Each structure stands twice: as C-alpha cells, then as structure tokens.
Length: 185
Ligand code: IMP
Image (spheres, helix red, strand yellow):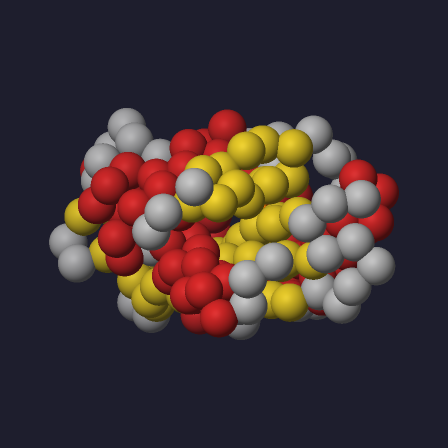
C-alpha cells in the first residue's frame, strides 16, 4: 500500500484523512511538522507554502490540508482566518454575527497541498456548499461542523463516513489521490 505523509497536528483531520484516503488504497502517516501559518488571503497560497516548507525541512514528500469556511452574508469571512475566529470567537459568536440574516449560504473549502523535496507544490481544492444553522447541533466532527448544515443535517450530526463522502476534505483528498494515480512518485 502506498503511503501518504500528512503534516498535521489536528487529530480530527488525521482521522478523516485516514478514512478518505484509506478507501482509495492509501495509508496515511502523520508527520510532526509545524509549518509557519502564512497570513495570506487565500488558502491555496497557505497550503502550497506549508507543503513546500515541510517537504524541504523533512526531505520527503508531504501532504498538508488548509481549510476554512466562507460565509456569504459576511463577504466570505472568516475564510482563511477561520482558525483565528474559532479560537477567539467560537461558533456561538459566529451565530450571533449572523443573527437576523436570511442569507445563510456558506462554503467549506479545503486545499490539499502536496510537495516533493526541492519540487514545486501542487494544490487540490475541494468544496461543499451548505448553510449556517440557527443553532449548534450534533456531537460529531469538530470546529464549525455543528453549525454547517448540509441537506438538513449539520456536519456535527453526521458520522465521519457520511461527512467524508460529501465534505470539502473528502473532495480535495479524492482529487489528490486521483492525480497521484497518473503521477506516481
Ligand atoms: P486549518 O485548516 O487547520 O487552518 O483550519 C481552519 C479552521 O477551520 C479551524 O478552526 C478548524 O477547526 C476549522 N475546520 C477545518 N476543517 C474543518 C472541518 O472539516 N469541519 C469543521 N471545521 C473545520
């Protein structure tokens, strides 16, 4: 089985990646590589930078995952600042910001970055469109999952397997796996 080295400190992302990539024949191994978070306006730049930084530092091929939630009524905020907003405001404050808004549309986006040592990074974008719920729901998942509604259920109400089938991360990682088939290392 081919191995994919995933630089992440996030146990939830790791669990999901193992499930998503395991289904298409890859084994995922976690790497300890805390790359500096670039302050950039788009996830692609951040992801490409992280993948290259880790690949060069560890001298091996590396995958990273940079994700964010883009809320229509907030002009795409928090987007690349999703981590900061979750850490400093949290879901309840996001719901408060959205109070009275009838446009609840939101997009979850993951950009998978992949790089070989000394090489150019490749990026793979996955998205899922949903809405922001009126209250937190569900005990599964992490981060914004309890307020992201997809076809009547929040991601927090979905078991991993169901979320992975439709999620931003699932879509991005399956794209990456597909690319790997025609670009073997
Ligand atoms: P990052 O990719 O680790 O920078 O994540 C950005 C923010 O989005 C963090 O606050 C994560 O907890 C959150 N996040 C990333 N992926 C997901 C997801 O699949 N569900 C819910 N929240 C997520």
